[in-house]
Image 1 (cartoon, rainbow, N blue to C red):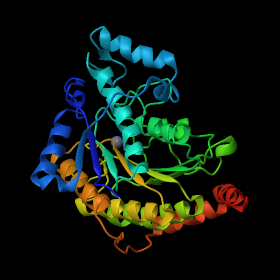
Image 2: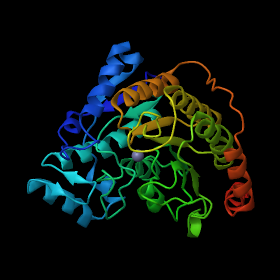
Image 3: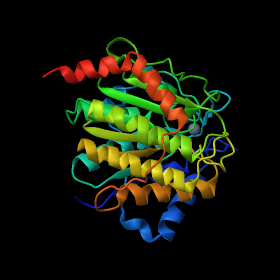
Image 4: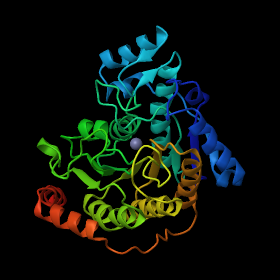
Length: 346
Ligand SMILES: [Zn+2]
C-alpha cells in the first residue's frame, strides 16, 4: 500500500461567502496543523475539477448552470445561509473532483485519502444548494465509485453534527449505498428522524441516528462502534466513505454536542477498523467544523488514526444506552430485513 493522500486545491481559499463561519481560514488552519505535525506522512496532491459526466450523475444540468451563472455574474446569496462569489463554482468543482480522486486513490492502493476542500457538500440536494453546500461532493464520489469503478456497495458514514439531507435524498431509493448519519436533533436542517429508513429498493439502506444536544464521546463513539460496525458487517461494503464534519466538537459554535479531539480520533479509528474488517478501502471528505483550532486538531487526529500503518486498534467503548436503543429500533424495523435479504442471495 502506498502513502495516504491529502487532496486539496487553492480554489478552496477563493470561495468567499462573505462574513461567514464557513470561511477560508478553516482550510488554512488545517493545513498549518498538518504541517506543524510534519505532514503526518501523507502525500499532498492537487485535486482536479470534477468531470462533467460525474457531476451530472448527481446534479441536473439546470442546477449546475444556476451555480455557474450566479458565480459568473458576480455571485450573491442563494438562501439565508448559502452565498457564492465569482470563484465559488471553481471551488465546488474541485471539491467534487477531490472526492472522486480520493476514491480513485484508495481503490488504486493508497492506504487512505482525505479530500480537504470547501465549500462542504452534504446538504446539497440534486437541484438545490443549501446549508453552505453547492454540489454534494461525497455523493459524486460514491457515484463515481459505482459508475466508473464498477463497485456495487458503498457505505457512507456521515458524522457531521448536521443531518446530511442531500446525501440522504440522493441515495434514498438505492440499495447500492448504505447511508448512515449520526447527527444532533433538533438542529438544522431538521431532517433525518430515526424513522427515515429509505424508500423503494433503498428501504433499510438509510440509517438515521439522531442524538440529543450535549451528547459527547460516549454517545458518538459508541454509535460508530456498536451500531455502524454491525451494519457494515451485514452490508459488506466494497468502499467506506466518511462525510467528516467536525462541528459536533465541544468547542464548535454552530451546535450543542460535546465531542472532543480524542472522540474524533476514536471515531476515525473505528471507521478504519470497519473498513479493514470488510476488506474495503477508506476515503474521507471534509464537511463542516467551525472552531478553527478544534477543527484543525481533530482533522489531524483523524489523519493519524486512518493513515497509520499496522492493524487497526480502535479503542474499546461501552455500549451506551443510546446505542442500545438504536440497535433495538433497527432490529425491530425494516432495515434488517432489507439487509439480510440482500445477503441471503448467492
Ligand atoms: Zn455541519
